[in-house]
Length: 413
Image (tube, rainbow, N blue to C red; front, top):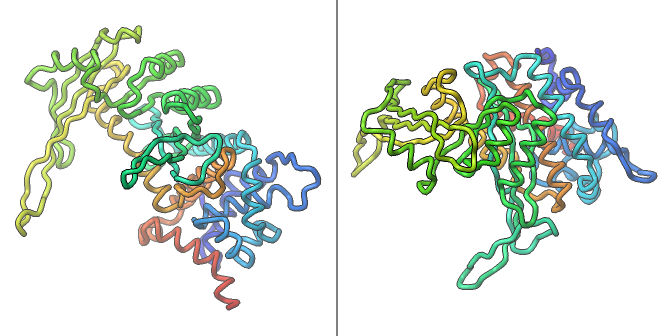
């Protein structure tokens, strides 16, 4: 998957758009999204391409896109003038989200075929977690969730949206594949179950092991995954769970295995064939890891080096004879990538925690387009020559794209 040739003064944004067409046929797929409007004045592809530019240039609002995009570099890509902010918001609320999911699925297929999304130690990993998009005391819609917050001694109703996100994880690359908004009175587990089922129906071979945090040691998740011959690996925190109580009674004072990986030393316990989970018919496995890492801290103006120990406990259906305990520990820590390479990056660098248009369909469509832009950006960046790619941090490459988008405005000033 080679990027278009470097040099010849071509802009980075232009090269990304050319790469999107060459590798993913993305412009044509966006143009093929259905439009159910009667006698539209502006073609539908203009709107969806404008929204893709919004994410690629990491602009903070529709107003910024309208103001900066009328003479910016993206006009050639749109082949049309930039729609207004109100027009963008109205069209985002009627976008075909199933078509956008199909585009993401096509990106996954292409990345898999081109050996970009690879297995880790023979297993394909995925992670699922929930994220709160935004909250407000004033702006709301019928699909908002609500909670009561005490502010200055007064109880106020806060409105917010929360979503379950599904991310594929491989060595050196990751892909945000899909997400599902929670309903107004829905818990995270129900939306996550709906999301997992859709991924299993549309991409049954995209993962072998699903990673989750302390919310997901639930029988309904494990049953669904085992019905499709998938495995679960989730953090086990709740001390009230019978399976954790039984495992702790069997851990013993002496670890079953120890090993060193870099500066961190691991003491591991591995308890298999536990049948104390009454609501789940299969036997499960519990892995405990005590991890000690030397850290340097400043105390009383002096740097002090001391050992810091953390405990992790995971519940899994992975068989011990196929997946050794060190691999289970490695996979368990890979779950953090959905936080670090997913939510943190999207909110801090992509303005994903902003309501561009407060409508359920608009939020869903914009986040799916964000996943497309996020995957496209990182896939393109990995194809730049290493000597150039490593010369700048990732966020500066994003700033270069924005600078090139704004260049015509500066030159005409």
